[in-house]
Image 1 (spheres, rainbow, N blue to C red):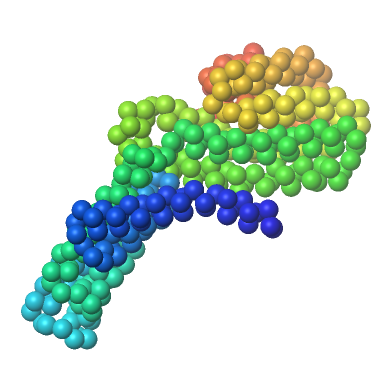
Image 2 (image 1 turned 90 degrees about the horizontal axis):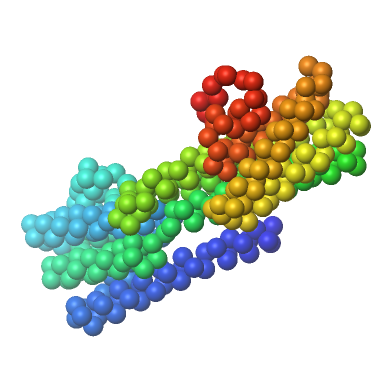
Amino acid sequence: MMETVLRRWAGSVWPIAQQTAAAVAAWVIAVRFAGHPEPFFAPIAAIVGLNVTLGRRGSNAVRLLIGVVVGIAVAELVVEFAGGGVWTLALATFFAMLIARAVDDQPIVVAQAAVSAVLITTFGSQEQGWERLLDALIGVGVALVFSQLLFAPEPLRLLRRAEGAVLSSLAEGLRLTADALEQNNHQLADQATRQLRALRDDLVALNTVRAAGARIVRHSLTWRMRAAQVALEKQRADQLDLLAGSGVMLARTAMATTDQERHSLAPAIRQLATALADMARDPGDGPARQRAADRALDLASWLIVHGAAVPAQSALADACAAVRMIAIDVMVFAGMEPEQALRAVHPDSDKEPPKDM
C-alpha cells in the first residue's frame, strides 16, 4: 500500500512542478507586461489548463478560455442592463452556464463560465472584466506553450513505457509458471495465475495511453507528421491484449499435465519469459525485438518437432496450443507479419490468420 502511494506521489511531482512554473510565469507576464496589479485569473488559467492527463492539456486550455470568455461577456452584459445585486449574480451565472453548455458541454467550459460570471458580478467592474479576460488569455497562452512546446508529450515514449509494464508483468507470470512446473508447486502456479490476471490493470493503462497518443497526434503539429509511426506502434500494442490472454491460458493448462510433461514444458515457457523480459527493458529497441522473434521462432520449431506426437484432446495439447499462440503473438509484436508468424508455427497451414491478430 505504501509503495503504491509513494509511486503515485513520485509520478505527480513532475506535472505539479510544471503547473507551478506555469502559474508563476503567467503571473509575472500579467504583472510586468500587462500592468495588472492582481492578475489572479492568469495563474489560475495556467494551472487549470495543465491539470489533466497527457494528450488533453492543449484542448483543456482552449476550453478553459472559451468558458472564461462566455462568462465574462455574459456578466458584462447583465451588469450593464441590470446593475448589481443578487439577481444580477443569479441571471449572469444561469445564462453563462446555459450558453457555455450550448457552445461546448464539457464540464470545464461550463464551470469556468460560471466562475467568471460570479467573479465579475460580485467583485469586478467592467474594466476589471476585460482585464481578467486578458489575464485568462495570458494563462491559457502559457499553458499552451508548456503543453505543446516546452513539455510536449511524446506518444511513442508513453506507448513503449506502457508496453514495457505489460511485458514485464507477463514475463514474471510466465517465469513463475516455469518455476511451478519444474518444482511441481501448485502454490507457485496459483501465484503465476494471479500475476497474469493482474495484467488487466496494465492493459487498462496501456489502453489509456493509446487513446492519449491519438489525441496528441491530432493536436500536435510535430507528431502529426509522424502519425504513421505512432499508428504502427499502436497496432503492435494491440497484440499485447492477445498475448496476455494466451499467458493466462498457458498458466491454467500447464499444471494439468503429467510430471514428465511439465518438465518438458518448463524450458519452453522460461524461454518465452526471457524473450518478454528482454523486450520489456526497451520495447522500441529493434535488436531486442529481433531476439524475441528469434526465440519465438526457435520455440515454434520445437513445437513442430515435438508437438506432432502429442495426443489430441489432452492437457498437454492444450498447453502446447497456448505456447503456440504466445509464440505467434510475440513474433507479431516484434514486427513479423501475422501471416508469416502463423506459417512459422503451422508450416503446412494455408489458412488466413484470425482478423484480430
